[in-house]
Length: 82
View 1: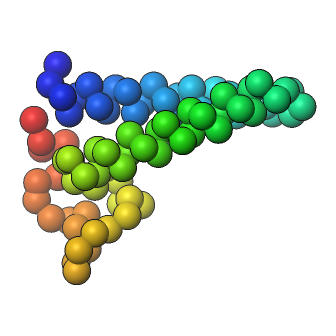
View 2: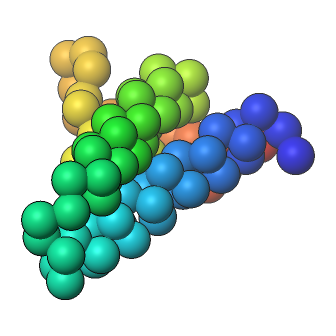
């Protein structure tokens, strides 16, 4: 597994954990530990997404666009990178 794949896996893990914590909070809205965990997972996912964007380009079309042109349609596409 290369560094790009490792970063994507870490990002996926944090996003999944944030999503699961959010689902738990749907049924346990007063659980301070779950709320804290959800916020931490969300922040970690945001940092990893930013790191990915800086290293490998835009991950999704909703990622911040840097530069003077719309970069989502520029080659290579995210899945073309090794």
